[in-house]
Image 1 (cartoon, one colour):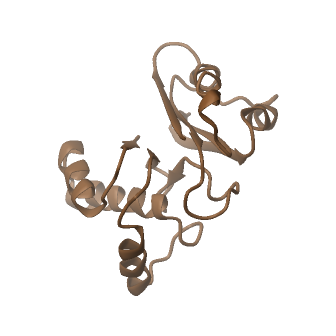
Image 2 (cartoon, rainbow, N blue to C red; image 1 turned 30 degrees about the horizontal axis):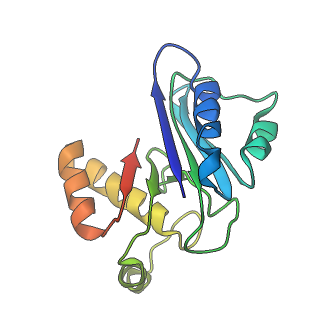
Length: 165
C-alpha cells in the first residue's frame, strides 16, 4: 500500500515529510521519495528500500524548502528500483507527480505511448508519462489546474489518488 504526505508551511518540509511518511510505514512499501521546491528548482530524492535508506541518503544534504510532497510506494508495475520509485517528474523537471493505487488502463496507455515514440528521462515509467501530459497542458495550452486534472483523469483510469505539484 502507498502513502502520500504533503507540506506547505513556514518550517522545513523535508523533516515533516519524512516524519509523516514514517507514520505510514505500517502500510508496507518498497521505496520512498520526496520532492521539494528548493531555490526555485524541483529537487527529487528517492530510493528503493525502507525510509531509513532515504534518511541516510539525505544525511548531511537535507533539502531546504517550505513546500514538498513525500511518497511511500509498493510497486505494482515494474520491479522496485530507484528509477521506478515515486515521485516522478516531467522531462523539464518542473512538474512532479505521485499517485496511489493501480492505473487500470496501464496496457492501453503503454501501447499508445510506445506508438508515439516519446523521449523521456527514465524510459517507460507510466507515472512520468502522466507528469509529462500535465506539463504539456500547462505549458502549451495555459490551462487551469482543474482543467488539466480533468483531462488527465479522463485519460487515465485511476482506482485511487493522483497528486501533482
